[in-house]
Image 1 (cartoon, helix red, strand yellow):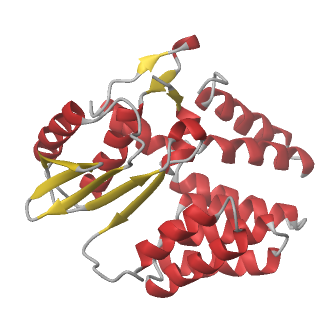
Image 2 (tube, helix red, strand yellow; image 1 turned 30 degrees about the horizontal axis):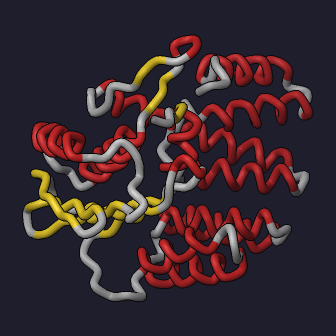
Length: 273
């Protein structure tokens, strides 16, 4: 069974480290321990973690979440099946479909789909409420995820369609801005991030990505402000502390640089995480 460190979970599920640790503390998963007591998660943990967050966001009572996840974990395979795995809501039941087989788990109203294999560095998580339109925001978002590796331009168009269908689709905004940034279209990427912040609020990852972009443009003061705002939203965003430490060194702010680097090392003490 392939173990996943904290950094892998952050990258695959787009979960802030603070949220991840709160879910662990709440007992939704019991990760193993690796070198220097780093947390190691199984494939089942990945599914349970993302499902727990979705149910909590939907304001499902904690006791019901715990009961649902206990049953969900009992039936989950040890690894992503070749036929894929889909978790969907039918009435008041959660139906898990693996290949041609289906089974139910006691849960709340939500819809999740998991595609790809984390062992290959890809796990696409698609959430939606009730949408029967084949061209809905989540369908476009899922298409964008599938196209990123082979056709970034087509993935970009898919994310644009997802945002057009749902202007507050945070994951589509993040991915769209990142693709533009990676393609050197910095002004367009900045416009996407700022429009997303106006629509979705001051999300920590949006602010962090904006900070990276501004820093690449040489706009150090604005990058500093964006990083600071990101940490105000999520003080445990380790990569933001790291970037801010290096930026403070460049801006001749040694005390702040030392403080942020110390915080980064505290949050990420072992490379295996």
